[in-house]
Image (tube, rainbow over the protein chains, first blue to last red):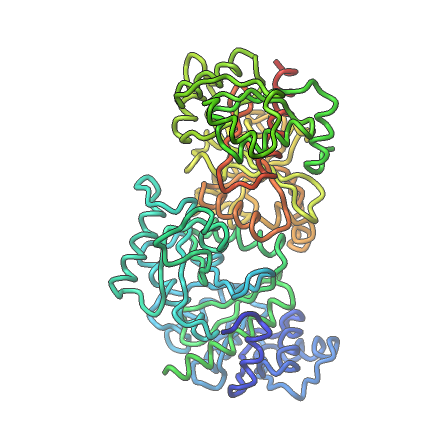
Length: 306
Length: 306
């Protein structure tokens, strides 16, 4: 089983080297991550953007530019279309945002001709390695889907199960979280969590075990779960996937973990034909590199299952 | 300024000793906390409940029962009424739940004759001391009010400001949290956060500084706030009070902090005429003792301001 990001990166040495296409690559932080990804054998890259701006940054950060393929496109929108088409056409394996507005970047992801649509809605997964937790935690959705409906939540689970499997986590345990662990008709989140469990039992959400509603401690802390006497449950503090009722709950916990726990993370946009890396400027260097490693593994898994 | 629970307990040595009335005191964990509170000079207690059940527990945990006032009431509902009346009549300073259903306990708190109603709605505050944070964090509401309206949120802030002041935190900075820090009409939580800020500026919420919407990192992490360029904001990673959009967001973060950060906490029900301590079985011994310390300080502050 893959327990941490070191394991994920080790796994990459066993598979064919992957390549990331970067949209509007003239971004120093993104180039630093891409450089580290090459040095650590995580992924190669194709830098799409303004060559006149990319080269000085490369020089500044000690990046040997002759090791990288550059596609010179000055216009940002055109650079994104060019980069995503490389992934669409199979010339690159994953797609990463550079110095371009998130809205424009996502428009290229969803482009009907050259984009990475699958028909499934997009969602976001953030993978955490936390000190004291013996396995990876997959948080979803903390950044992309604001108020998921029941159907959205089912799709978010399906998207996330693919990522778990790529990370070597088979049949992941999925916890739809709430403040409480009992169904309360006055709390729609608990009713939907129960319904997701039922959908899983009826085979409508496959390749995972869904058990909810669960409070955060029953989902993630075995001692707390035992203390509360969580009998007859499928998840007893050993959830792999934490599914949030909405983006506020997810985002607040996500940032709480980043700032108040000893942890590292990486994240991806999912539901796409190939992994999409959309890190923000506030993400650390390590988060960006981890996200590239995650993307490379998922790209490999998607290729094998095609 | 009071920075941690040690400071809070030290502050108690400067004020008149307080007394807690325990409803249905035959609960070993509650008695252990009450015993520690006495030993650490935090508070004395009046144990209301079944004496025949209290005494053997006291003996088991090495509690010298002659140091404690016992009021022998066998029936739970009657014991709660008796205990809350002691607080109502000023014979005790705060009220604590023992081995009684939460529902029955709260009914006694809200009893029109002998209870602790103030006209304001009740809410819950959880006070955190977190390693690496140089001040106390007041989380509300993570346990009591499921879906606060705008008016509820204003009252929750008012309730919480009282607790901050009792802890020596004057003019606390209050952050209504959301996934994002900009007002987005599609996210009612952000609109309400903005409105709370406006109410504060208009003097409708007093003795505090409200600034929202804020993401968790802008509210609690000065570096992240500076990195994101949070200019012109009243809160730059230095919030005292974290106001959650709903109980799910609050409870999930609260339990995340308990299990994944180095922290300790204590909690109270607020909006009552005297502090009410409603810890759960899953709360640790230290949480119960911290909650008693918090209650004693708040009781002292309420008395002085009356």
